[in-house]
Image (tube, rainbow, N blue to C red; front, side, top):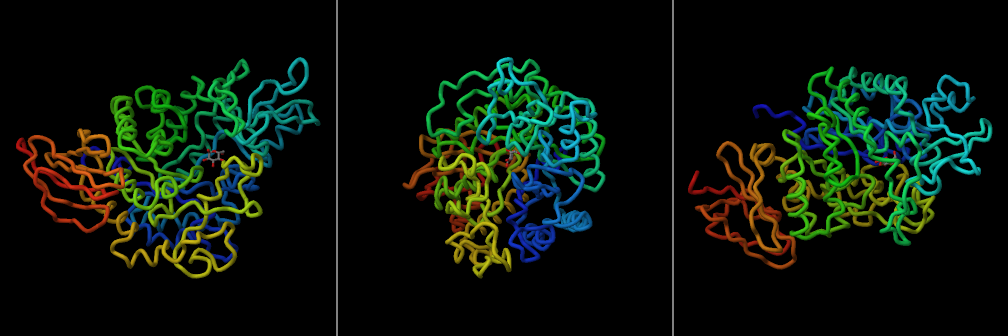
Length: 534
Ligand code: GLC
């Protein structure tokens, strides 16, 4: 496929390493576990795996608090095991993307220990230290994403340090050239080991206001929302200088062939687009999370697709995400019937899809009892439903004790649906959601129209979402019924007829279409269509 890159054609699969596969019975997933399941991922038909952080970490935020950027946490394995994983993955044609966490380190990182040791430390300026406000107390009103002030008092040196997340996650000062150099070295360390790219954590937080202005109140804040929402993050996120920092990372990647830079930023489309960088010198793929919060109806989704496509800068490549380790699972948001429609949507829209582990077998959020809570966000701000444990539960490989994930006690509970919702049962069932995902991935791989083709929305009334994907004269039509009632789609003028390639029920392949497509409740269909103009 001429001119397109692997990360444009390909599908990314996110692995939350604590929960994918445990090889040593300690109840926590590890690298040898992932390696033992590569055959499954290759069978499934994804192109790349992105592994959430595997670096040494005190695990205050389960690996997003890094104490050594160039190592592997012993809970996950060793550097040798990592190299073996990359080798095996590459041998199967799977790319490996790592999580890169530049905004903050762990408070146990040697850099921070040195920085906090004294005001005269060489590394004092590597973090964001400030004197108290004139009348005492924190320097600004800035709030931590995980509750409370974003400033932590350090009695020993008489200053506060800034942490956008937990106090165990002090923010690095990306205005410091020494920090940038050190963090670029980290990228090179992994690129030299053969890593195919990075998902960059919370990129819009990287630079904070130089003048330390207070954030204004958020007029749409309502009680019951997470406490940090009380303020608009005007001066703490998405600052103009962030783009230069992103371009610096990109320059490092551009010294290597064919690597990908993906950025995590929850932002409205107009602001998100800036992360592609001037003349596309920034992120290859600033994550598009807009389907995650979308009201699940055809009109709302059509509007999101329209707005996104219209906002993309020339030459920028789109991407789509249905879920991740921070958000409720798609299955729990839209229900089992629509989860199939969602799968077809994710894998037929124009742009690189990222699939969250377990979504392909229809895993749901697992209820977590108060005494089982692991996520510090939930512990800090209990009862508001912000906890992320439910979507981080172990991958369900089979129906046995431990779900085929562990021979020990899993760190989070398995779903009560384990008997049905597991890989082994669904691999044997040609009608399962796993079979649907696999068929969608195979079709996407076989049809350039689906991976790199043009996207053309079709008028389809309020309940249906319909679009065409076109490449080199081949035209595919996607029709999705977002309701639980049967619906009919009139094929657009000029279409002479068609043939179903895949339906969400996996039971209509080959069916010939006339002037209409009749969709059953909660059904999606992909068809090849021939039109008068060819
Ligand atoms: C990102 C991660 C999230 C983490 C936070 C702080 O949003 O996805 O899991 O808690 O950054 O690193």
